[in-house]
Structure formats: structure tokens, C-alpha cells
Image (cartoon, rainbow, N blue to C red):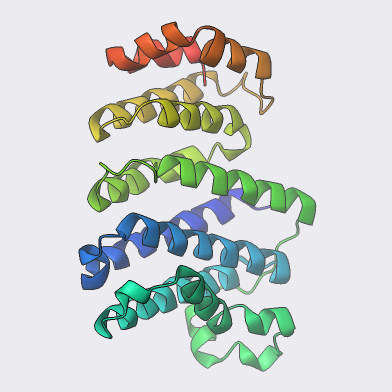
Length: 257
């Protein structure tokens, strides 16, 4: 299965979504930017995954997921221009996007519905072979890591900082997605215990990425629950001391995430 190609295309779509947010006057002014980004990104992810599973075609997945964020941002900007922000319901936005994108696929897309404009955009009509169960697990791992990386609960992070996290870390981490379960769990635990500023958080991510690179040949996706419980709970005082010291290299070497 073309996991590498799927990851490259997926990250490209996410980066394009971030660029459009940067250009959006509404999204940059809203006080709920993080939650709006989160809803849009998860909608994009679900559409990308659904189209891959439905059509086995990467280019179609890119096309429909791009339509997703265009329609999502269009909806959010229309709500803002109509002064209806206080009545904003993100579920309505998500349903609007799904109606505009994947409902036709769910009902069975006619061959000619993939119209001339779409054919101009899409240059590769080759389908890919994959196991659906394996593919769903693959996308679940991606979703977990993406939402962990963006650290949505940390209100101190700005849009520009998250955009930089995306540009710097999303692709190299997802290229190791089959061995990221341990990394994702430790990152999630750290985020719940300490609100890291962007400088320290960036250092942590760089150290983890470097650690993965060094140990890549010997790593597996098996998660050692006993080791996790030992370090995060039994030895929590030591864990917290290492985390708050600012020495991310020491912390990462100890955790081996």
C-alpha cells in the first residue's frame, strides 16, 4: 500500500488549509480560532479518509478534502459577515461541508460527476490497493498524532505558532506513523501535566524526532504499558522534575518515546 504517497498528499492538504486560514480575515479575528481550526481539520481528515476508503484513489481524496476546507472557510466567513457568530454551531458547519463534498460519494458517485474541472485538477487516476481494516487503523493513528501535535488545549499557542509546528514537524513525524503510538501517548501525558510555551515545546518535539531517527531500526509500535505507568505515575516526581528543568534532551533520553 502507498502509505508514503498518502502521507505526502495528506500533509500537503493540511498545509494548504493552514495557508488559507492565514489569508482569512474572519479566522484571524475570531476569538474561537483554535476550536474552529480543530473542527475544520477533523472534518478534512474524515473526508480524506472516507474518500480513500470509498474510491481507493489518492487524487480524489485530495480533491474532496480541499473542497472540504474551502467550503468550511466559506461557511465560517458567511456566518461572520451576517453577524451570526453568537449563534455559530460547528455541527451545522460540518454538515454543510459534508453535503457539499462526500454525500454524493455515499450515494454512489456517477462516473460523469467527476466533472471536467475535476479532471483538470486531478492528473493521476490510478487507484491504490489496500486492506480497509489496516487503512482505518492507519488513519486513526494519523488523527491521534495530528491532534496531539497541535496541542489544542494550550491556549497560549497562537495560530502562527501552530502553523509553524505544522510546517516543521507534521511530515517528518507522520513518515514514522507506524511507530508513533508511544510518542503520541507520552506527548499527550506531558501536555496534560504542563502547559509548555512554544520554545520548550519545539525543543521537545525536535528531541523526540531525533530520538526516533536514532532508534528507528530497533523501534516497534508495541506500547509498553508497564514502562509508561512506571515513569508517568510511580516516578511522577522525577518525571515532573525533568520536564520543568527545561532539559528536553535529558527528558527524552529517559522516556525514550
